[in-house]
Image 1: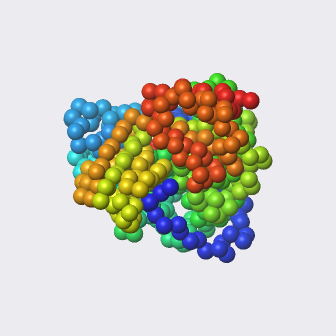
Image 2 (image 1 turned 90 degrees about the horizontal axis):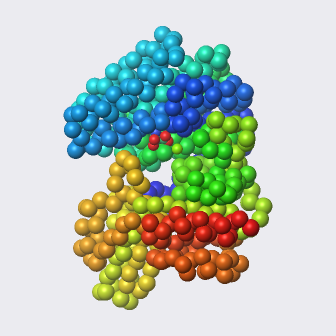
Image 3 (image 1 turned 60 degrees about the vertical axis):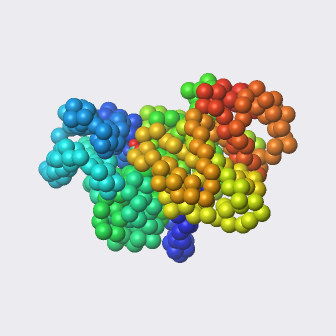
Length: 463
Ligand code: ASP
Ligand code: MG
């Protein structure tokens, strides 16, 4: 559930004739170094329909950039993080010589990064400017790697088309403005060229750089696919699709061949790390199929996310999301009065807070929020808590994990005994079921959550 933005309408006529174009997105590990980039370039060479390539920053770069935004950083730490970014870029450059046009842009961008990184940056706008450098740099290098393979590739500044509001750090895209800009300056290029552009980055109506939030490159790829009316978007990452649970946790986890948009959206939202949760939104509203596969092993296939329902009802996956905040708000005076929830949610939405689970009683409401590590902004600001405290008692609990069972037509009845047998061994803090047939969620102590997931996977999914 999100309080972030109202659903956007997209002109319907655009859907009628889909182009044959595919947008491919390569994540940080896929563009971590020259060798990884070369592997990805083979994927593009093999599929002539791939016309837009959205890249992440090379692995590690965005974490350095996030660290450089912190005001508490010492001059030594600052230098270490700058050097960290430069080392990653130079290791790739050592294997590559840039054509003059790309070299000019790359060198200017690198210089601009070094200048800005030395400054103390205090505003969210400045932070987004700095955070954007990872993708801006990797896109030059990747364009050159594609040229080495004989492709007519060019680098394109995504800020010309990916238009957003001015919510720095977690900007909301403007779908109409993006489609319009794509029509004018991007689509005309695609017949001739493979365009390499940046994930994660956008620009507001004043031309200031914005970002879509950590992991936002997947979302960018889906938004670009929507803007050019692509037939599909391919997300190339370091795993062979979306698994029934994290394979590092359960050796018997299996990749899922097909998921519906609804299931995939729930999985991404509730912790399957493979996709940014918002990615499915543009894909599902514009009927664009999404593929998720490994750029290391493209031949192994991956997961297709499509409009069709998955073949069978039932539980398909169990996910977990650590570092959850449980916010409990109580207001005894509100007994039998109305408007309490409206007031709470108005404030949460003023602070652009995205709420996941909600349970209520007559005089209280419990809400979970995601406190993602390495986020470029904290989810819950003190100013928000202060505002809530004006009319209710506020309690905040940390160190919780949200565990979600994901699937189709999940009915507690079918799984009751197994599930209850698993859960009775653990301390369950809150349960949510009923609003969607695609999930059943609960909160557990963070220290126990790996065990909870393993127990659920083995008793409900390995049958
Ligand atoms: N580079 C950004 C991040 O690490 C965006 C992305 O890779 O999707 O969060
Ligand atoms: Mg990612």
